[in-house]
Each structure stands twice: as C-alpha cells, then as structure tokens.
Length: 149
Image 1 (tube, rainbow, N blue to C red):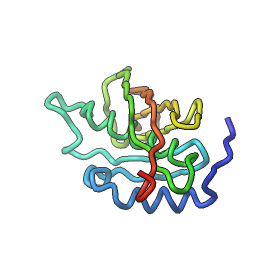
Image 2: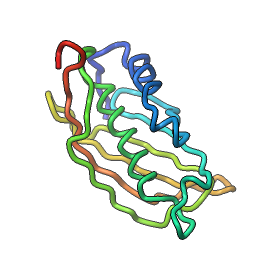
Image 3: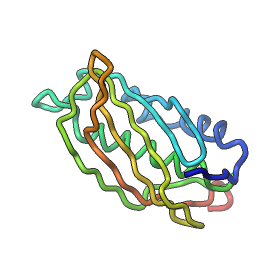
C-alpha cells in the first residue's frame, strides 16, 4: 500500500526520535529504511541476544518488531503526534538463529487514532539467506506530544 504522510519531514522526525531510544541503541538495533507506513531495521547478533539454549531471545525478537511497527505508524501521524503501543502479539514461527536480524514493519490499516501494523522478523545466516522466524501484529495509538498531550 502507498500512504501519504501528514508530516512531510517524517524521516527526520523518526530519526530524531529514534536517537532518543536508549534501549534500541543498547541492544544494537538500527533503522535502515524508512518510507510512509514502512520501516526496516537490523541487528547484528551478539552473545547478549541469546537465551539459555543459544537461540535469539524472544524478547529481542518482540522488541525489534515493536520498534519497526511503532515507527511505521509514526511515519503517518501529524507532526505534533507520536505513537505508543496499545496491543502487541508475536507469533514465533522458527527458532531464531543466525548472524543478523532484519525487522520489517508496515501499517496495514491507518486510522485517525489507531494504526494496525504487522512485522516480519527474519534471521540471516552467514551466506545471506533470510528465514522468517516471527511475525508480529500491533495496534499503535496516536498520542499528542508536548503541550498536546
């Protein structure tokens, strides 16, 4: 789907907001592609991302899904608005293994207040082969920022 952003500076707004996302930086997640209603990011897998059995921790998977879906919705709100997660569901499809994660979030239905989103989380092995390991669904809620809250 093609969406028209309400904030023409949505890319700069998202990058400025992302710079303040301390947790995303802590785990090493970076945004790599931003379009109206679509955001992609990636994470190089390190030991800190693994759970006790050596697979990528489900919390890492759900975190990156939440981030890309939230910013996909954020790309469509007014300049004086932000987004917060109202509802989040993750379906873990396969064990998370590999050297890199790619998260692709998109808005599937925008509204005035609520934005319905989905995300694909893919692991990438040393040969560059992508494997879908999880799919996320969320409802993002537009909220006023600053004095508009």
